[in-house]
Image 1 (spheres, rainbow, N blue to C red):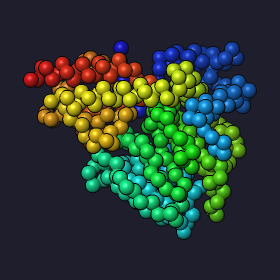
Image 2 (image 1 turned 90 degrees about the vertical axis):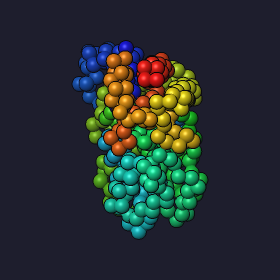
Image 3 (image 1 turned 30 degrees about the vertical axis):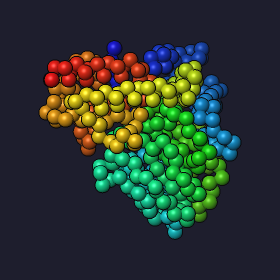
Image 4 (image 1 turned 180 degrees about the vertical axis):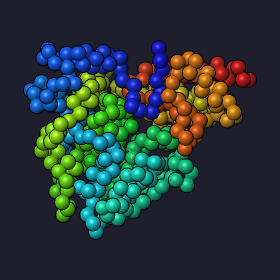
Length: 355
């Protein structure tokens, strides 16, 4: 068995792979592959409807919010958010906690002013800034909830009276959230929701239509919502696999149950990192991510040998991002805790060899 700790696209459950592969051969008794079916057929419209319904159910999305399926990943949302919410003479507040947050604020500067209310760049993004002050005249406040590269996660929404926008790409559906605390949530699917190719946005309807700017139709949330996620040809297969994965998540007991598993997985690995004399974490303990566990070795010369040692045990995807080095174990919803124990065993055995 391969133990896939890759940062994304994510590992998905085997049963989802099996169902998706069957649909590639024939979808829902139509005699057609899911890859060739028209997105305008009742069969596929039912897929979109169920996907949206499952997102609303699993996240307990309240009335007054729309769920829309888009394309372009979170990277396109970096532009789409300010294009729809930031006027030319307005200022948006951004929290800078990593590469993706900095890319988002860079795009926002094209459309208006940006106020970086706090940043952890001074310590290579190894912590989450505290006691953030957000000016009440901000058009909105934007933050990234989980930082895949540096391994930090912001579990509590900073207090503010302005609209809150969150890039939740790498921890959406991994933990219980109160959607009402947010005005706009966006996420690329390829961490916990499904395969790469589809993006979800959860938008509070009342924040739209307030900007005096001509917005291209494809980048206008209201146009996309009114089009029922099918203003243009959607990523059919990615949406279908996302639906299967959301069904799987519901069958496991939903987000509250998967959160318990994610806590167990991350606690087990962090406990070994803190106990094992060869390894050490890179982030402040209180800000550690449940999704992406970053760690290095006390002796950097042992990192390549350990990587090879892990690969020999079918552990893949743990090499850290080049800006951090060391290792990164990404533990999304689809990763079983048995794989975490295989990694822990490898760390212990390697330490035993190098006593």
